[in-house]
Image (cartoon, rainbow, N blue to C red):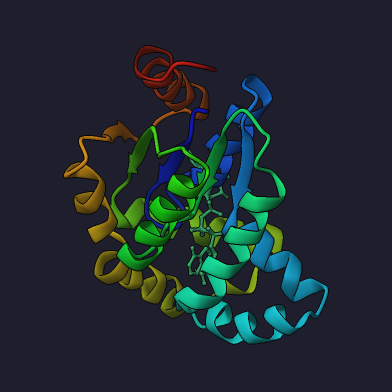
Length: 194
Ligand code: B4P
């Protein structure tokens, strides 16, 4: 299996690049943001719990997200590999993911980190807020909260995988195709499939 984590702050282009990657490779795309938004729109028990955190720019508690992703991984354990988008977002989640992979006799192949400065992130998210109506993209205070949550809780995940020698960094500013080409180069050079 090739198991890739697409990593970066909110608005870095994770979802955008993941979409292009799954068109070009046979990995199963798991976006915790998309799964959570789906739970919210279906008004499930999990969705009701997650909504308040998401609308306020906070991370949803680890136990809820880990349980959710665990079920997705178990349901799809026969795929060629996973493309994780927006997960793991805390070191706790990273440890849980490593364990889940171990249980399948697998491991994370690499983490690709998209690097984008705060001003560009804010511009992108506000623009998307106007177009998509996503609640968490509309208010600059909520966007700043998400960026701050990233710096405090999510950025340490990079160190965690750096110790395992699995980090690759890509400049996330430029045309979407240019960034995609750089990501693909890394995957074709350093992973087995794709
Ligand atoms: P996510 O859905 O993961 O959303 P995101 O971080 O805002 O990034 P996304 O991937 O959607 O945006 P992208 O960068 O592609 O999370 C939303 C919320 O869910 C979180 O705040 C949290 O509450 C919760 N959550 C999710 N996962 C969780 C977890 N594991 N643990 C706890 N809570 C969790 O793109 C942004 C915009 O930039 C788009 O409009 C795009 O068109 C544009 N763009 C992309 N690339 C560009 C480029 N190169 N140039 C210009 N614009 C570009």
